[in-house]
Amino acid sequence: MPSLLNALRGKHLKARLTNPYDEFWDRRLGIETFGYVPKVGADHDPYVQVHYQPTPYGDVWRILRHLRLQPEDVYVDLGSGLGRTVFAAHRLGAGRAIGVDINGALVQQCRQRVTTPAIEFIESPAQHYPHVHTTVLFMFHPFGPGTLSDVLARLDDSLDHRPRRVRVAYMNPVHNDCLRQSRYLHQVEAWPPAYNRWTRSGHYAVTFWESRSELPSHA
Image 1 (cartoon, rainbow, N blue to C red):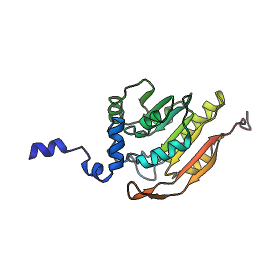
Image 2: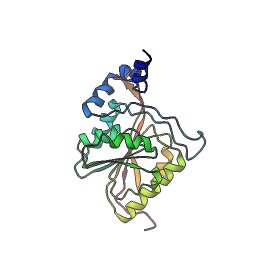
Image 3: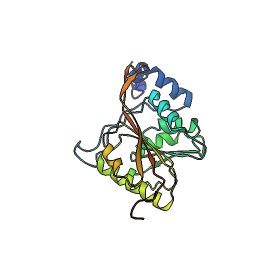
Image 4: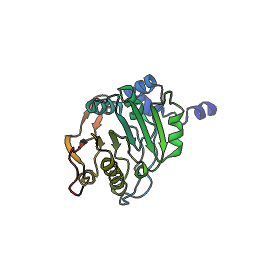
């Protein structure tokens, strides 16, 4: 019995049994994304790293289909954890799908599941990622307002040098005000929280943003 318990430890059986839709899609995609990593830092810390929990697949498909991913898209998930949305974005047609996470152990687990050069996982602080080619950005409230502001500054800088259409989906938009400070992004839609019939829990709110076509006023 002890050996059996040791073998089952870390398999997240309770989460798998209570979320059969998520378990189904993990198996369909050939990945393992159930898990939890506690937050790093205090709530009031502008650079807090929010705890990791995977985005429910019901939300993943709903959001990604709304974004209408295309073969020319470079999809980036900041705070990608075990990569659920990255693998899903590739399945739905993104030409490249990239996960960025500061947790090296999570990144290594993701890399073991990659079977195509179109999917990539990068170990890096989110604010250091350059967004040179990003066209779709996804975030599930992964960090505090300090990090988010730095991320958006990098994104704006990339648009200064390479103007293009960028779409952003911000799930559980705790720091929506930070996105309003972007020189390029403007909010185009907002989904309120709603009941999730697959998990018997609630959908998080989601805000959607796009880059403006005009140059900033200082240019």
